[in-house]
Structures are given as C-alpha cells and as structure tokens.
Length: 482
Image (cartoon, rainbow, N blue to C red; front, top):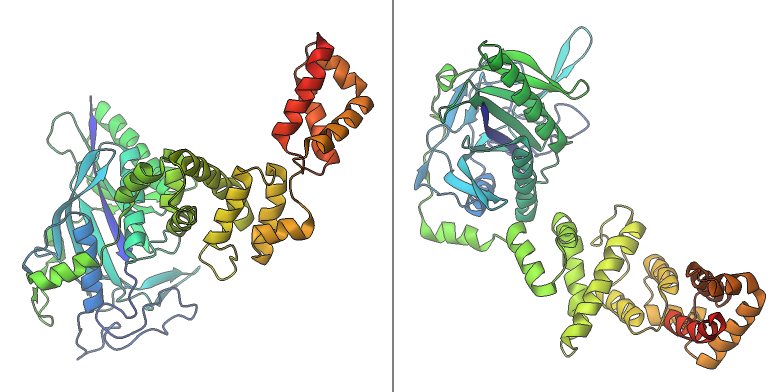
C-alpha cells in the first residue's frame, strides 16, 4: 500500500514599513502600478541593497515561536533564474545559512518538524492581457519569509491544520496579516508516495490560495499518483498548479533542483551575526501568549468548551473582550456564581453579540459596549432582573447607543415583573381566554403549557419572570387535570 509523505512550503509577506533591501513603501496592493519603486528594487545598474533589520527581527521572532534554533551566523545568497517579474535576473534569498532552522509546530499532539525559516525578497507581479503581459514592480522587494517543513506530514487534513495554525501564530505575533486572498500567505505542497520509508518522486503543487484548496489539492494529488503507481507507470517530478474550478492539479513545468539556481553568497550584503544573547532575549520578550498556550489557559481558568475557546482563539480581540468582561464580575463571588455568569456571558457573546456585530470587531471605534456594561448586563440576566426576551432588546439598545443596561431598563420600563399577585392576575385572564389549551393540557398534551406561557409572556411584553409564571401555572393547571 502506498503511503503519502507530505511537506509544505509557506511564503509570508512581512508587515514592515519599507521593502526588504530599500526604503520604498511596503504596499504591494497599491492601486497604481509601479508607484512604490526605486533603482534598488528595479535593479538599476550601480544600486546597492541594504538589509531591513525589522524584517530580520520579525523572522527571528517567528522562528523562536516555532521552537527553532537561531544560528550564530546567517547570510544572504543569490538565487539565479530568469523570469519577467524578476528584474535583476536573480532573487536575493538564503540557502545554506538561514535565519532559523530545526524547529517544530505541534498539531494534535504531534510535532511537525520545520526544516528552516528564511528571508528573501518577493518578485514583481505579472498582469496578463489578451495579447501581452504587463509587470507591476510595487511588490518587487517586499520582505518575504519562507517556512519549509520536513517531509513528515501524514495527510491533507494535517497539512491544512498546520497551515491554519501557522497563520494564527503569525497574526498573534503581528509579523504579518497573513491574508491568503491578498497573497500575503501562500502555501505550496510537496507530495510523494512510497511503500517504504524512502521518499518517492516529489511533485509540488502551487496556486493553493485557500485552506480548502490546500486540503483538496493534496487529496487529489495523492489519488492521482496512487493511480499512476498502481498501473506500473512512473510519477514525473514536476510542478503542478491547482485548478480551483475543476478541482484537479495541472502540469506546469519540470521541477528544478537546487543546483539549477546556481546559488552563491550575495556579495553586496554582509554576514549577519545573530548569536548575541542580549539580542535574542530582547526578541523573546516580544513574543506574546501564542494560540496553543491560550487554548490551555482559557480552558483551565474559565472551564469553557472547546468550540467556544476556538471562537476566542480565532478572533483574538473577541477573546480579549471576553476576559475583560469576566474580570468585571468581581473576585468575591462564589465559584458557582462565577461559572454561571461565565457560561451566560459566552452564550450572549457567541450568539447575540456576534449577530449584532455582523463581522465587525469589538476593538473598533464604532463598538460602544464597554466590558463593564456587558458584565452588568449579564449579571442582570443571571439575577432574574430581565428575561431573555427583554435581554435581546436591551443588548440591541446597548449596541446602538453605548448606554449602560440599568439606564435602558429604567428608561424604557423593561424591569421584570416578579410580583406574584400581578402575575397570577394575568394568568387567570389568559386561562379564561384559552379554554382549548387548558383542555389539551388536561388530556395530557404537555405542549399546551408552553403555549399558555407564550401567551402570558406576550401579554406582559416579555417582562414577566418565566420561572414564576411556570410555577403559578402548574399550581393552577395540575389540580384541573386530576
């Protein structure tokens, strides 16, 4: 049986003010072509590159977050090949002395080994017309970080999870926005099949511009190679593209080996001396709490379920807002009440508040609900001051005005009716008007009581305490059914 052996390469556009080797603005999505260019990034004769130290720092920060070793020395190399979007005829990259090496990322309790994380410059962008092509050099020279795994991934699903977790880490580190749609996070997969531990013929897939494409593309290529090998044919070492519409890989060109690029040290750039303890420690201090550590802490501290935790992990600002809300509940409450409030808070955050946000963020200027007011809102629900129906009205008002919940409840007369005599009077009236529902209840139809509760809540505009309503209703109806 043939087993797949997978590796992935990820190219990441770093979030720096300027390009990798010049002072041009790092803005590849500039709408006007060839605006952010200079003699260095367009390879004019006599121009010399200068290393962007912020790009180096961000790459090392990423490497440390991925458990990589940072070597004492690193250098840049020339990777020679001709292509219209590469003005120099070579790319400044790294070959045998990368900035970071021998790391790993844990996915589902399995350590996926990372061979290297290195730094290079991006190429320009080709724009193809019907009869000709144009080149936009705004992207040429953008700091591009490349991560290469060892061939140790076992499945398309695992490769997808690796890429998704890596994207999260990059965003937590704030080294890149890592937006796949904008080309800031590009994944390429290497697939080979073998019956032994020895690697088979490697095929690389490009154009994987979504996580779905990563999984689908690898699955398709495993199937394609399996069919070739089962028919006693040979797999060709090549680069293939992913056709999103047909959901197939398509042959592009035969894959180059490293020696085809004629790598040699970049003569215009100095060797980097990284093995300075103070510098590495400075970078380490900048590393925030990363996604996996955060998952574990949220579960331990707040006892919330995995699905809710993942919402807070994927949306970092939303998770931070949740923690600020919880901190407003106060330290003197019983464990039971705290856990009850937390559960209620997560329910309203994940469902009602996210529904109001419609994709917007809680850290934006237009978001008006303070953590203190949201905590007060949850406490009012927990203590029975307002019903769930009224709570939706109050939250919507808080969202649009930023006013605290107590003020809204008082101003709009939304306080819950808890007076038993008043509720009993309303119940009596509802029972007299709904004799059929009463008869249905007597016949054993349990849904009849829910109908009556609905009628009572409607008559009180959702202000009657549901528990008191149900208790009084049961006291009145159960003797009738005997």
